[in-house]
View (cartoon, rainbow, N blue to C red):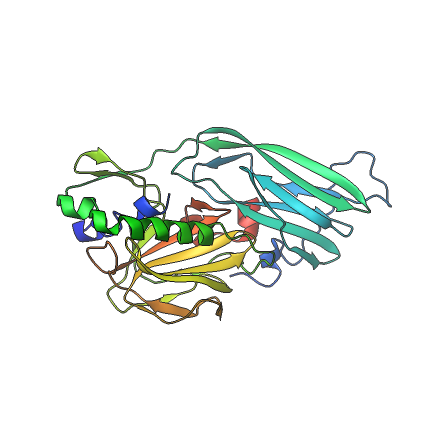
Length: 318
Ligand SMILES: [Zn+2]
């Protein structure tokens, strides 16, 4: 059974938040020979282009799209769920590679086909790739909690504070910056076991609440919290629900968020490396016990972080 304290720790956060090699990070392995072409009229002079994206993903599941070209790629734009990102372009083995991370949010995603569009210029010609990605329904585990009312409903005097924090958080979460600094797999921020999974359907005093939009890790107070990938610190706050929290921009729309810290060891504007200590775990904010809550935002959607710790880019694209 899951410890009730741990179950309860992140109960309120949802209210405010509506190893590979250098080559592997480009989504290719040494020895890959990417000569795929979807163009039946391709000639030696024509560019060979290959667009990879999954047919089906689960609700909340992050995924990758990759465009590989034998010629220089320019102005690649990925359109997904009303957002757009211009992924950084890498060159490896004479292949030009654009890769973006996408996903949906368990909070509001609906099952069904969702259109993915990628445009790119090659040799001055604008090309468009379209694909329907089927978002599949998934049943997440259920959790029932009984808590004192005062822990469930914030007092009126903090409403203004919560509203202003919500704006700052939304801005940080929706950051889409041009340089991709993340690579897969992400680094696990602490070693402790996962105590609450992403998507957990939470019922508080029998009432349904927002699902858990991150992962909780067991982390006794004072446990160093490591950054999951290279990035830049865009927000440090002491927020009503999340307590001491840190937001790191990893580029191209990927943002990691760390909550309930007892101590923060970096500041806004700092460039941070994968594995760098961001702070120490704690129980600040609406948490009933020390732990780490981690969320991963992708173009503003909070996705399931779990697959990002165990899959390389190639495994995502297989
Ligand atoms: Zn949590």
